[in-house]
Length: 337
Image (cartoon, rainbow, N blue to C red; front, side):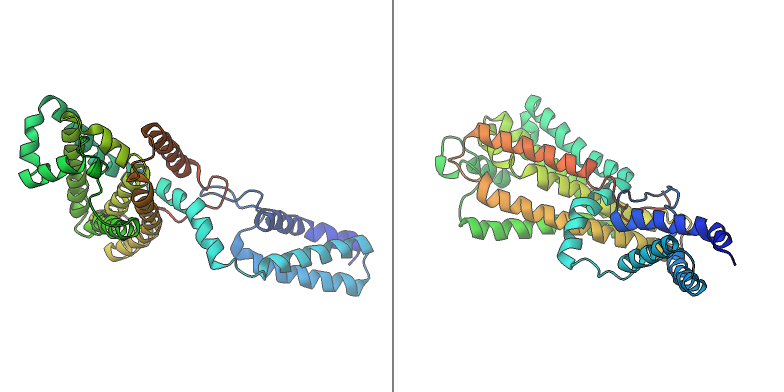
């Protein structure tokens, strides 16, 4: 076969292979669900690579021109580098998941996340506003011992307990906050196994409790120390609770409405998504506990600085969830949604 005929027969597949190399090897633009394949489907690549090696050997045996041999040799070497490169270390994969994969996964479950936000935020905000006009209703929501303890913890006239901490070193309280936060997150997620009802109840209960405490303290004039204490860790902690709730609702949805999957397969699929979401939630709650132990309870920090840091954290957390992972490969999501 003449060289011109050989090139005309295989030129298209060489170009497709080169496009795939540029996309996957250099990561210029990763594909998203629904995008056309870049040059080749990943499943075709090993066979195409073997064909390329055979074509290179054939071209050498037939004595084709040096430019053609150099191009085929270059494609073969680049393909070998991409196909046989070592996987990234675990720490790098973990970092990539937190930076890109986790926010992508949260966005892929937008419906469950929105429902979780409503279940949590509506009772919280509603009770906070209601208690400003009907403060006596707090006695229908919390028992007298709880009310007395909250009032003492955030009493602005008592500087010893003015920021919600009554005992323990920072490290002791850090351990306490970690256990408390993680237990809330796990309860919120695991409640999804009760067809989502458990998650719904936990979200509403947390919204009611936080809204009642915040509304009551604000109504009796203890709001300043309370807001200074919660402002720092609230962006991470509250957002993590909502995401854990979304993961629990997704789990419940797998049971109640499995779609085209068998119920068991739908539950396994939702469980995998929920488990990955919980990994990110655990990191957020760990960071929230650190901020709560070492920043929120520090009385020497002025209020304006605490509120400024809180605003930056809110912007950072929401920006991360909104834009994190754009332009990179999409995380596994609900492909039936």
